[in-house]
Length: 355
Image (cartoon, helix red, strand yellow):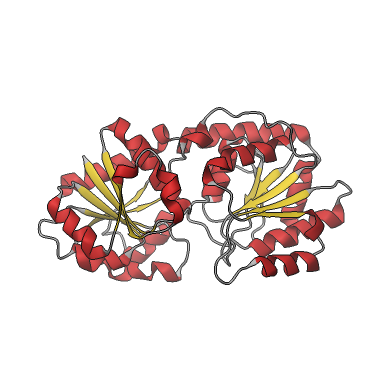
């Protein structure tokens, strides 16, 4: 089976990491997978070893490629600008749409995708699938296809030596409104005020156009955690597993303060490295974090409750170790390539067979 995944931007975001894992691992399932990006960007480093299956060009360029080279199925990931070109392709392969965006305003296109010859919709979690199903109705099949983690995250954990001297409370993601980096700074302020133990606060991720170094600087200074804050803006993706190892072995915690998520890839990646995690009790997180067993869940929007959960883990080494071990077992059972990709393959085969 040959499949083409189509996405807007070749950056270093979560969708690109998922596509990298798919292209690396699907060959072992006898699937010839390719990815087409409508706009070039800095994400080529994620696809080392599979560069020959990465393509960049306009929607019309992609449509011409599909006319020339036979593909069994096409999936379009949150890239509605591709639809007009696809409907003009003679003998177009079956089309699936993947909905990964957590932005409600970015899901508006779902209201008119019935105009294309759609075979189904894919979503990374049951939470996201339910959101999509409510928009589309019951006549469009929606498949839950969990995101596979890249193999460096699922490889055996390695002790980080020397570990950071102080516990690290880390936040990973884009610095935008939905990921809510300000919520992390607020949490850090609360933790600092309530604990005598010196901790470090790490922000790992790049800012958008509206979020620059001065925004982080002044906000952290107002919240009085600036002396203990580090911002890793351009950390190479291949170093992320070791960064999680460093956080784990520092006696620290990874936290999410997201307002909306369709999956929560950075949290799953941290869990794969046996990091204890603290996340909102909302959205997709309760699907793979059972509170008290695989991580701790806090009341959404409550920096007070989130800080209490973080402090609980900072002061209890046995709990950190237990949660980290259980977290790794849980995500490997659900999101390793061997566990996650069969769900995707079944959805692709269903689309092909229905054509």
